[in-house]
Amino acid sequence: MKIYKLKTGYAEFVNVLLRKGKKVVAPTIYQNTLLFREINSVNEIVLPENYINTVRSAKEFMFPITEPVVEFSYKNKELQLDDYEPEVNEKVIIGLRPCDAAAFPVIDDIFNYEYKDAFYNKRREETILITIACENADESCFCTSVGIKPDSAQGSDILLKKNTAGNYFAYASSEKGERLVNQFLDILEEIIELVDENPVYKQTAEKVRTPLELEKIKDWLDKNFDNPAWDEYGARCLGCASCAFLCPTCHCFDIVDEMKYNHGLRRKNWDACQFPVFTLHSSGHNPRDVQNKRYRQRVMHKFKYYNDRFNKILCTGCGRCIRACPVNLDIYQVVSGITQTGVSK
Amino acid sequence: MNNIYKPFLAKIEGLNWETPDTKTFKLKFIDPEVSEKFSFRAGQFGEYSAFGEGESTFCISSSPTRTGYIECSFKVVGKVTSSLNNKDVGDVIGFRGPYGNWFPIEDMFDKNLIFIGGGIGMAPLRSLIWNCLDLRDKFKDITILYGARSVGDLCYKNELKEWESRSDVNFVKTVDPGGEDKTWNGKIGFVPTILNEISPLPDTAVAITCGPPIMIKYVLQNLENLGFKPNQIVTTLENRMKCGLGKCGRCNVGHTYVCIDGPVFTAGQLAELPDDF
Image (cartoon, rainbow over all chains, first blue to last red; front, top):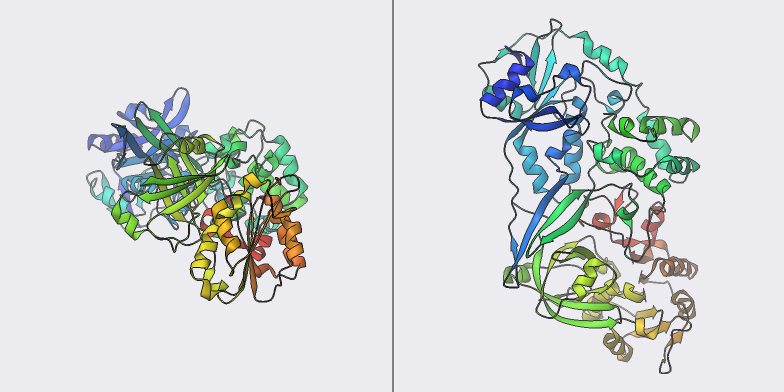
């Protein structure tokens, strides 16, 4: 991994990206909410010192909330199927946290095993992720539980990190990152010597929740598909799916047709396993007919099923599901609690 | 760009009402190249689209030995199937597939086959039955037990007559008590009960079953009581699907995706799955 010293501050770096004609996506305040959006001016960004994390993760830039996948129309009553190509431009997402960047290598697997989702892959190829290491954490963060650290580079193309003196350094952690760096050598200076470790990252790692015992959790989940604990969580869970929509690794979707006059689009929309109709058969039968089963599916998918199939945990410890849950159902407490008592505290 | 969500276009070449609410379409791909290259195995399924309404999942109910077309049978229940129902011969629908695994037909060579079907569950079995009948020499005795709620609910009525008249097929039909009419000459009783009456021998036999979940449950129990080993019983599962590609996340039973790892499972494999279907 090559390391470069930034000759400018963070904001000026964003400014240079914009000046050189890059499409830049960064955390901005939109309707009182901190969200990733495409920016036109550096004045729109929120500086990393001022946020723990955005409300929604960065996954929507690879896997949009809604996107057309097939286009069709009727011309003189004759059905025509068009070759739908998504408009994808090269863009830079800057200011995402290591937990969001780490989500992409995890969901790359689901979008590429057996059948390759070209919509996801095209966006993935055209997007450069510039991650910013965390100098702070809140009470919901638990990244160290799932193999991520406040200054991890996994999934990032470039990781921005400070040295003790407070200067930013860019760690180019992929070929894509290297290529971007090479276009900005006027503001980036390659350095050979090691950068001194800023203790703030270690301190942040200590601020996040105590690491989970993943093996113990997996072992419990392997044996406890049927357990009264699920009934308790099911009774609390409202099934609103806020957790799934904010999660950087949740990837379930629906396929829906929309038609106006004689033109139609088939769309891929975000969906969630917490909704009763998600698995409802047309016969009326529903394999996951009550919230207990749907909540169990969520926990099992994250910590067991995905692990069984891809040897990865479908969670990056970003804590969004904990912050957003209207009934304070806390997945960290759930999985740490079940291994001890069978039921969470 | 290789778009995995893009369907092939297929023209409805023929249609047949199987029951008052179940229809069969005979489909031919419009693109001659697709038509020529397309191949599938009995047991596989596809996503059929009524453009403007959406997609539905059905198996391919025709046999892979009959090339140049595919057939599907569906019950008119929801938005997509209602829209498909409104289509006529000559209309165009979409098809993505074939998806999923298939019946292990090579493992059934030189064995006695017992097909046990219920209602619309006959559709995937029909694909395999014709596949086997077209390669009749490769199998020993073939028994088909087919039941439905009532006489009117039996699908593929013309083909049932053909199977009944063939000397190389032992065909047994039944309807649930109360479902018979004046002309009914078959059995009266639930499929699992009639299965016990026939009592097929488990030696060098394979049982293939599909039907409503409650029927499958008791058929599996009765087969095991008759001495069938779990790996001698093959069934096909169905779950709600959207993508059919192992991505959209709704058809899983435990870590098993019905669309990728199934829909065909042996009773042994089913027993390993958590009770989530």
